[in-house]
Amino acid sequence: MSQMIIEIFRSSKRDEMYLYVEKQKGTKDVPEMLMERFGKPISAMTMLLKPEKKLARANAEDVMKAIREQGFYLQMPPVRDEYLLDLYKAPTEAKY
Image (tube, rainbow, N blue to C red; front, side):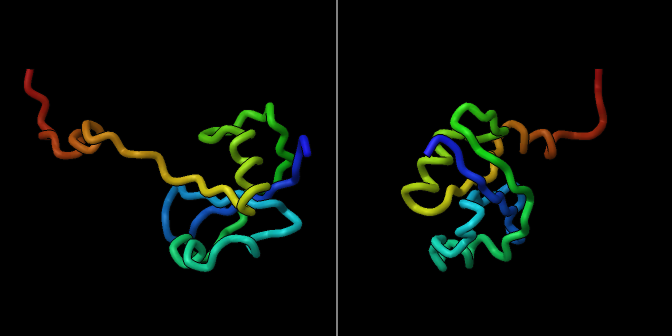
């Protein structure tokens, strides 16, 4: 299968967590425990996915392989670098 129609859901519980599934199957193959942690799936988009398709934070071939093998692909939120978190702790008064 060189292409598939997928639906992408965003999590109602965690920002930037997405679940990719085959459109016609929906979330029925997603384990119940994962769905509990994911929360209510909110449809973000439906798209035709091909191996060469550019995705923002995932490799299309990896997504398609995971959907074929386990029924879904879970995209986790990006890791926040510690130094970026430190920016919020920095003093707000600039001193030169």
